[in-house]
Amino acid sequence: MVLDLGDNALLQTLPHDFSTGLANTKILFLDHCNLDFSTGSEENATTLNDNDSGALEPYQPFSEMKALEYLYLHDNSIRHFPASIVANLTTLYVLYLRGNLLQTWESETTAYMPTD
Image (cartoon, rainbow, N blue to C red; front, side, top):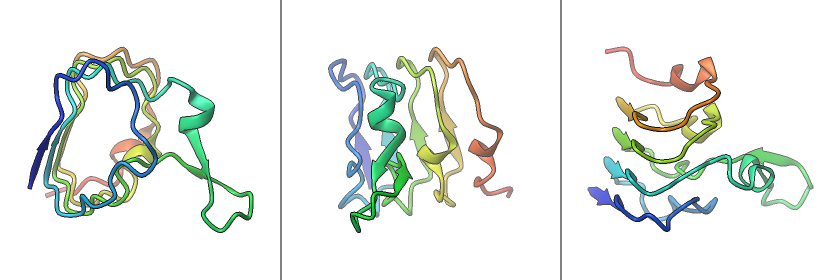
């Protein structure tokens, strides 16, 4: 399945449950959307755990997309890209971030990617 949401300039952030129902998506286009995962960093960095324990969990808008192979996030306004955003996406072969405003990069971000 391919989902193309590119060229949506008003799409600036993704909800925590963005990937619900998208488990079979293999290719996702979110290019030219003005996305910035730093916007409202307190909101995006963590979310309350479902069990209401008060524990904080990382922001993972793509967590349900277990078949995702290609993620196109180029030409957005992304300044900070925490590794948690793509954590557990073990089938992701391409992460395309060209044309952003990246100020930080976590070495763990690509640790999950297949090596073959």
